[in-house]
Length: 210
Image (cartoon, rainbow, N blue to C red; front, side, top):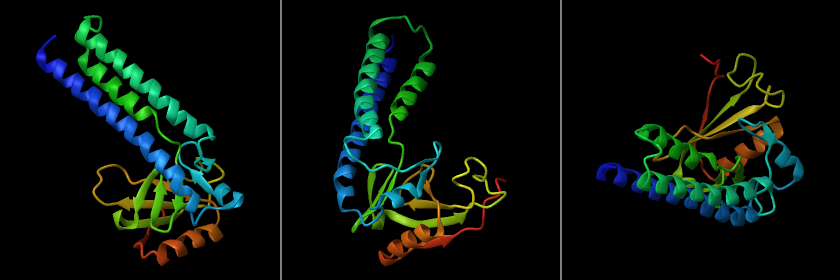
């Protein structure tokens, strides 16, 4: 075991713990802030927001929801698992020289504990995928209708002819997060609220999956 490998995995463990704990703290803050949300409020408004990948209706953020408990206990389990991996790296030769594969496993574990997604519009910002985002952190938001030939069309019947809402954030290198709004009434309501908060808007032509 070289000193360089020891330092690398120790630093990776610290970064992983910080990332996991920060996500959980962000989610707890978002759960508290969501009580003052301007949108969504009613059950029909929650049902009208579709979360990507699973294509399920959005849920409230409360400590009783399945997705919140998943992040809470998943964070604890992930930290314990990372600790076990670190001890194995530092004290045994069981993993041989497969350090690249182990580093990749660290990253998989770090990214496996995520809230399933959400959007809340607040008086001073939004909650996006379990994280508070102030209005001045939003570069702009983009909209597209999911019509035939759109990249999302056909992935689930709930998204067909719905509206894709993408938020471009400042100072980030990650793919812009998006949600899907099922009907035009709710889409216009969200547009109106964001317009009142002076969030910049950009309308895109449908993405044909090219």
